[in-house]
Structure formats: structure tokens, C-alpha cells
Length: 487
Image: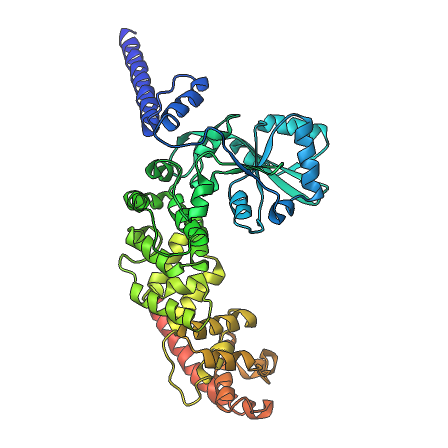
């Protein structure tokens, strides 16, 4: 009995020590010395606000009445604004839409911030019989309201990050607009726009926008470590804002290089989403090279030594021909073979279209010498059974764009694909082994293409018996070899 009590006591001590160790480790990760939930906001202010980070005492820098600003006021937004006003909650446009409006651009998406908590919003919308959708965002403070069954509005409560792991954050709600602005990534994305037109800019984002300057809010190391995807977001917004490809802030680039390893924590889908936009935007070449210079290759699915020289050649050739290549095609220019493509796909989780296009490019991008230069590409368009014809044709066009074969591309686009005279039903009784059917059809198509698409059904049928005989021998040999391996 005494022994059991002793063991029980030791286990209790061990559990207590483990709990303390874990608690201390979690708190140390973010340097938060937190003892009570209510202390989170105060400590966060001390660590994040009582620094040398410059901010405005009066954040209102102007009042807008531009066409871009007025254009966002749909009847549904007017209703939403009236609703928040009725319940004495403040509602402002946040982030990227503010930046775009200040740049004279029509914002594609509107994000809203409010001092109302999610629970208060739910109660308000329920009382006013406003439909709410997508409840997944509630734990992060986002409520999505659908007005008049016509327009969705994502509205997020002001918040602070109390714990982050480089990908996700535990948040706590606040009613302090400056604190919310302070948790955002770039100064140009940290502004708010009141529905009365007032622009709220706590951290000189408007000044940076006018100067064409892309910098993080405060210490770039802290901002990056909160979410390592911000490394790629930096490059994306640089391409959207800047007029020159090489005017990076030195301290920012140093922070990117220091923290580049954090990208291994980020999912491939998120990385590809951002990189895709970088490659589709301004300075795609220069920004990708700078990203690689920061040491990103092995974290974003590329070989340790990607072929950057070929990337430069392919990109600049496309630019000089006024051709836009698909983002994945630009990446393929840095890869050697199918193995590199598969490794890229394993990391980025490409769509089926992008994955297959990448494989198709590495298999067929080399020059195909032929008396009739268009013929090899006509064959590629016609001799593939695993994809829809329109997708296959798009892949062939992309090869020609990639190679800079502008004249051939023009010819291919003008080429009207003739209808093949035969179909599987016509061949069924002539092909004894069913799995040979595709191979027989391909051989017949090659003969048809070589004859400039002029052979008739009767003329093609004359070739079937010879093709079947040759293929039958191959298939029987393969079957015998398989049987031997099984034995």
C-alpha cells in the first residue's frame, strides 16, 4: 500500500512538471509571460506597441470621394452600413481594398473590419433576419453575411494574435483599431477606410504607397515569423506596387533570407497560390530570381540548383514576342526532367491541368526537326487519348509559346483539325485483342497524318491487318514475359 502511494505521488509530480514544462515552452515561443486571459491584450501591447515603431497619433490622413470609392456602395452595402450604424458598431473597409482604392484601382474584393464581436454580429443579423453562411470563419472572428440573396460580406472582428506557430494564430478580439493594424503584414495593407470616406493610416502605409515602398509593419522578422507565407506575399505585393524591379529595402531582404527556412512549414497549396500570382504579375523574372537568391529553392519544390539561366532565356524570349506563358511553364524552364516535375508536384500539389502540362512540356519541349515543321505538333494534337481535344490543343500551343515559335503557333491556331475517318466501332471485328485498340488507332492516324489527312476510310482500312499483325506479336511477347515474372 505504501509503495502504491509512493508511485502515485511520483506520477503526480511528473505530470505537474510536464505541464509546467509545456506551459513554459509555449509561452517562451512567443515571449509572452501570460498568467490570465485578460492579460493577453496588455502584454501584447507592451511587446508590440511600446517599441520604436513610429505611428500617427491622429490616424485620419484624408477623406475620399473618388469614383473608385463611390463604386463600392451597392444597395446591399448601404443596407449593411445602416445596420451597423443602427446597433452602434463601427464598420470599415480593411486591407488590400483600401490600398487599391488609393491607387485608383477598382477593388476586386472587399474585406471589412468591425469592433463588434462575432457573437454581437450573430445576434444582430439574427434579429434583422440576415442570412449567415460559412460558419468556419467564426473562430477567427469572421462572420459572412448574405444580403438580399445577392451579395456576401466577410466581416472580421478586430483582433490580436496571442500565439502563432508560423502558420496559424490564436486570436483574441479587441476594440482597438491600432492593435489590429499592428498585426497586419505590410504597411500598405494596414490601412482602414471608413464608409464616410475617412482613411485611417496608423503606420504610414499611405506614405509608403506614394513613395512606392513595400515594407513590413515594424520588425520584419517578427512579422515573418508570425506567418512564413508573408515571405511570398512580400514579393507579390512588390510586383503590384513598384515601378522598378530592384528597389528592395535592405533590412527586409535580410529578414527574408534569415527566415526563409520557415517556408517548409507552409502547405504547398498556399505557396503555389502566392507564387502563381508572382509569376503572373510584374517583374516575374526578377522577383523569382530574388526569391531564389534568398535560398527558397528546396522549400518550394525546385531542385537545389534550378536552371535559372534557362528560366531567364524562356521568360525574356516570351516577353520579346509579346507572349504570356502560364506560370507553371515558367517554372518548368528551371527543371530538367519528369522527376523534377513530380518532385515539384509533390511539394506544391498542382492541379491536374498544371501537373500534366508540366510533364508534357518537359517531354516535348525540344526542337522537332521535320520537312513540314508543323507536322510534329499536329501529331501531338491528334495522337493523345487521355485528354479532351481542347486541352490537348492548349498544351501544344503552350509548347510553341515556350519555344518562341511564333509563326508555327500562328499556323497551328489557324489549322482546322480534320475529322479522322475511322472510329473504334469500325475496327472492333478486326482487332482481336481489345487493349490493342488505342495502339491500332494511333498507327492509323500516323499514316493518315503522313498522307496529309487525305486518306479515306477504305484506304485506311487496308492498313489494319498489317498493323494488327505487328502489334499482336509485341503484345504476345509482353504477355509471355509477364507470365515468366509471375512464375
